[in-house]
Amino acid sequence: MADSSWDNGGQPMQGKKGMSIWAKVALGCGVVFLLGLGGCVVLGATCARAIGKTMDGREWVQLKQAVQQLETDEGAKALYQSNPELAQAYPTEEGFLDQARMWRPKLEPLPPQMPSVFTGKISYNVSVNGGFRKVELGYTNGKGGRIASRWENGRLQMISLD
Image (cartoon, rainbow, N blue to C red; front, side, top):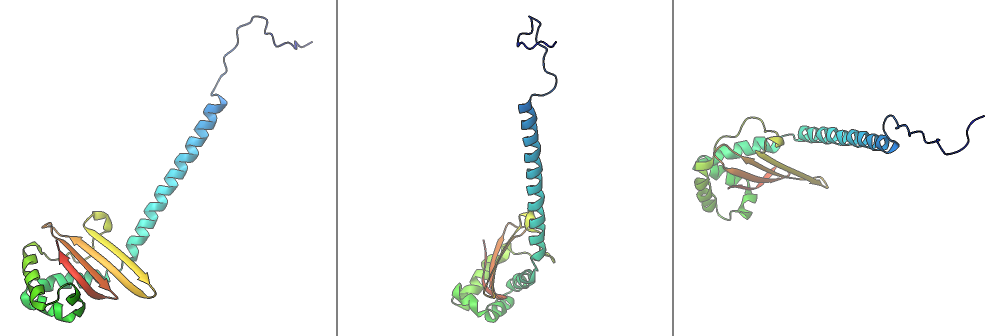
């Protein structure tokens, strides 16, 4: 007949082998947490890569051309005349030319392809509202000059160099 008492008759208790139930629960939660965290990292990287691919670089080509034009008075004058919206930031052509002359020591040609936003040299902000496309594009060149530009529907609205 089996002993039905709770008394072990003075025998020492045997230690449980393996992990306790709480250790198993904690381990399971940790594994789930790490898998979730890894999934979030992968999803974030995938989204960032997809966003990088959607940057068509159309304004980059225009900015590259604008920077090239700023290197001479004739080019800066042509840039100002072909972008009448620049008059909001620079009311007179002569004022724009003076500004372009001050920028020249910090200007250098832009790379042929737009660098990745992950290089830290470029900032790229696009907003589209009702078919109206606004782009703010900035680039830090090798001389430490920060070129900032704003484009609305492909037209240069503002350009500056800090």
